[in-house]
Structure formats: structure tokens, C-alpha cells
Length: 372
Image 1 (cartoon, one colour):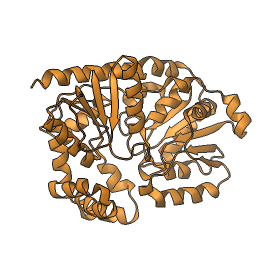
Image 2 (cartoon, rainbow, N blue to C red):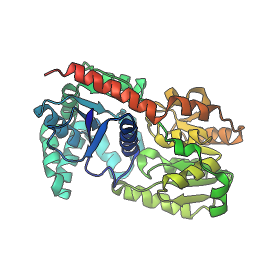
Image 3 (cartoon, one colour):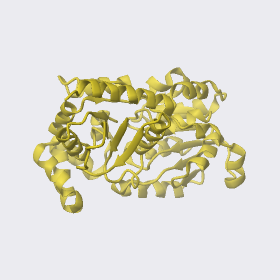
Image 4 (cartoon, rainbow, N blue to C red):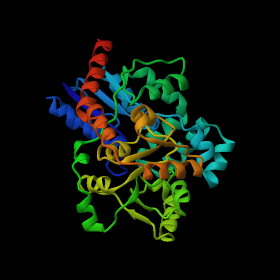
């Protein structure tokens, strides 16, 4: 089978879990003998492809036009939705001007206004943003769900969220679990300590931005005496948040920050950490949590999103709106004995080979549905 994966223009510049999911799925599909190309174009020639695989229902502007192009070429389309409702984050997690705007305008109006602004600030993508401003954000999401043949959410909870938020639409669904690359089980705590001299620490690996909620984690742990290591790049859209974050890091000797790390070094970091924390406003379930769990870390995760579906009783969960909840969960995990039960569970259930096999089932369903 020949597959074209299509994504936003900058997945290799602003990297996130979506980028990892795409690249690792591609590698695993190729191991199964399939041909997989990646394109960030809006309207490429699709003549030679059997299936088009799109990503992201939330950042829908690019995906919408790519789906229209796939339908023009009469190609089966699947969509990795990577979706969760962000209403709570928008109403409670935003700060400053954005919070004020969120209290004045509804979601669709906010996204239309953003699209107009981006069409001016990013003229190369003006076509995408002006179309979204004209069509409407929510209407594009709904029309996208009508166009695709199969959706591939990462959990049953994500599927239920989509069915609820976009009712009465119920596109054909096949759940494809997220996964962790095996390299994260091979790290060396000793190698990390020899290089950095840091041990007995709490770890948070995530892009530094408002939704990942690092400032709440800093507030929760600032007086505990725990060493906390943060790793992650900064999104250009969250520069102010990053600046506040860096100021707080500099003002507490127990807080340490590293920019993005290569996978080999990250594997050592995971192996050395006592606890990995993602107190995000929502996760699906958070690739870094899966990676850390595979390395043997104790896991503290947000209780918003699909993390409990993945980690079940093997992790500690916190309320991202509650500093006390975050602190209690981290301290409980830190005090607990390390166990390899979760690592073995992740290795067996959430690997990229299995994800690729489930993705193929989604492709086959799309081919069956889309018989021109």
C-alpha cells in the first residue's frame, strides 16, 4: 500500500507529540512493507497514492483544505484526530488579554478573529486563514468529519469526546493507541549522572506552554526541596509564558531547565528520574509520559483526558486547576517504591508496531468504505 501522510507546514519546526506520532507510525508502517511519504503541501498530486492520512482536528485550517484536495482526487481519507475539548483550559487556564478575549467571544468568533490576524502576519498561509475566517472554525471541523472516511483517535475517551462535541455526527472510528519507542527502555541513569551530576529528581518533559501547565508545577513544588528538571522547547506563540517560566527557574536553585534533547540522551534522563509529571490541562495521554513509563519512571499525570485509560491504576493523577492536588500527587509518587510493572505493561500494549497494525485496519476500513 502507498500512503501519503499530510500535516501542517511546520511539524519539524514546532515539534510536538503529533510530529512523533506521524514519524514513528511511518517507520512502523515501512517495516511492514508499505510505502509512506510525508507532505505539508495543501494540494499535492495524489494520483499514485492508495490512502491519504491527515492529522489534527483541532488545528483544522490546513487539514480541511488537504481533505478537500483528497476528495477531489477521489482518495480514501483517514484522520488522526488528536482532539480534546479545551473549553476548561480556555476559560480557566488562559491569562491576561487572552483570558479577557475568551470571556467576551465564543470559540468560533475567537478562531475567526485569529485567522484574520494570522492571514496578515503569515502571508504565505493567507489562503488557509482567510478560508477559515470565511467558512468558520467549527463548520470546518464538522465538514472535515463528514469528508473523512475513518477517524483514528488515540483512545475511546477521545472518540466519545468527538461524538459528543460534534453530535449528531458519528464518523466511522477505529482507535489507534499512542505508543513509546523502545529506545526509552535502554537508557542509563549512571551515564546521565556522570554528565550532569543530577540525581533523585522530578522530571517534566513537555513543550513550555500554557496548556502544559509548568507554572502550576513550579508553584506546587517550590517549597518542597525537591529537585525538578524541566525539558522542552518553546512555541513562538507562547513566548511570554516561557519568559515567566525562565524567571521562576532562575529564582529557585532546585529548578533546572534543558532545551529539547535527542532521544538517546532523553532515554538516560528518563531512567535517572524518580517521577515524571505532566500536570497539563488535557493530555491524549502525553507521549512523554508513555516514554518515561517505559523507562521505569513513576508517573504523575493530569486527570483530564485519556491518561487514566492508558495508565490505569499504575499512575498517580492530579487536578491541573489545584496546586495542592499536584503537590500531593508528586510527593506520593516520589515516596513510593519504584516498580517495573508499568514499564512492562507499556512495552506490551503501547508500542509502535501495534499502533501501525491498528492504523492499517483503519486504512482497510477506509478503502472498503470509499469504493469509487
